[in-house]
Amino acid sequence: MMRYDIGLAVTDTSVPHRKVILILFLHFITTNFSEERLVLGIETSCDDTGIAVVSDVRGVVSQRVSSQYDVHRSYQGVVPHLARRAHQQNIEILLKEVMEGAQASSPLDFAKLSAIAVTAGPGLGPCLGVGLDKAKELAMHHNLPFIAVNHLEVRRFLVNHVIGS
Image (cartoon, rainbow, N blue to C red; front, side, top):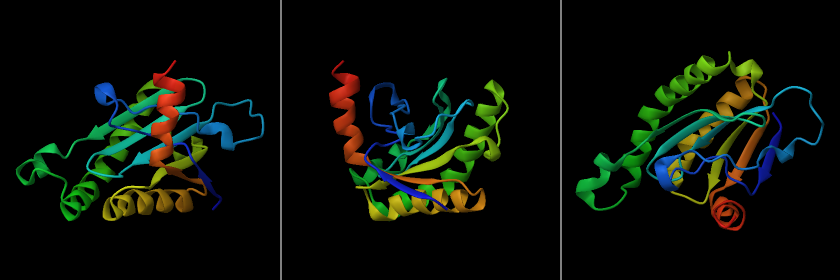
């Protein structure tokens, strides 16, 4: 399994309209490919689970976000062990929905993916662990590159390159 550590996050569920944002994380591939490159991104840094398939040609192909607002509302803040449990319950469901949603627009299976990317920090340790474990499992099982991304760097990138333009 190849591992890449880059400073651009693949998904960010806290931006307006709760969209999973396409960030230019495909720059890790230096070879010119004639085919479309697809990356599966996983975001579990805090209390929402976000998964997307992103294309370097079509942008966001499929995305799903599961909010944990109801889980934490009575505590008036995020409870890490409850957030971890919710991620564990949601991640497989969202992954299945994202892959099926991607198939609706263009046939897709894991063999067509170019890499698996995941938020590696900063964030709540128990929550990050769920996404990291799933991403590593998928990358190893499907022999795909593993891309660890920094959640803070995406915020800086958004301000400098997306929101600011």
